[in-house]
Image (cartoon, rainbow, N blue to C red; front, side, top):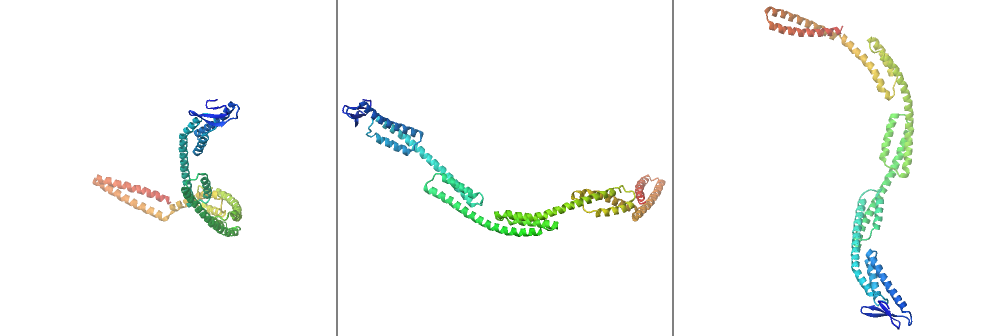
Length: 407
């Protein structure tokens, strides 16, 4: 006998339901009644365990609403005419109490699905927009890699409704196809251009090799600069040929420029010797200053100037210094000659003498006028005439000093 069931003398097993009881089985006549009760009680406990587990899974949200609903229906079916001893009604009540939780779980899962769908729609729309932008562009280097990455991202997203998913996929696929066609065409055209560039560069190499033995340093250097500009303008040859072509082209230039460097080195050595000669000449030239005897200095200068020109070119970094020093001496001699000419110019000397004579005559006339004015007692006129006399005498002093400069 238990609170929820009993076994009668005939071995019939009953479970209490409401105010009555229901026959659920028959135990072997003469068997242990407690053992029978324990057996049917364990059946109840198994049902109770299933209800407990289902409650926990629904509470934790680890079961889908559909699976939870199926589990509730299964347990309800098992409770009908259940061959178990226990509070079967309480299990039904607990199952009834799960319905609100199931509805809440269904609403939550629906919201989550809608959220995932919205996020997937947003993500796929973004992927399509980026793919269409790539498809309309010309980023041949990175575009293909990015489209592959977008495809992987698309595959990882959940499907939308068939119509929405198909529409977006069509746009995505069309963008990829358009890009692939344009990219293929671009590289096809590029391949043609590279083949043409290879032919052009092979001809440039022939020209470069033909010039490599030239000793016309200036003209050939200009020719190589022109070849380099044409090389750059030709564009790139196929990758497997470009490096080889460049090495041949560069090698031809190196032959010429190494020869030019050697020639320049020899020339620099010669120019350094010339500079040393000119420094020795400068010692002689600068010793002519200050000038004491102009004619002797001129004779010495003519010899120095001839030897200076014959000495030849000097290193570029010494030109300014050396030329500057020799020009100082040259200018000093030229200035001295100019001064000598000014001093001895006959025409200027004659003009100076004529000016002196005229000023002396004018001064004599003014002095006579002063004497007459003084005799007449005209003090105002005397003062005016004396001012005029002072001005004429000042001019006379200047004219006399100028005349003395001409000897």
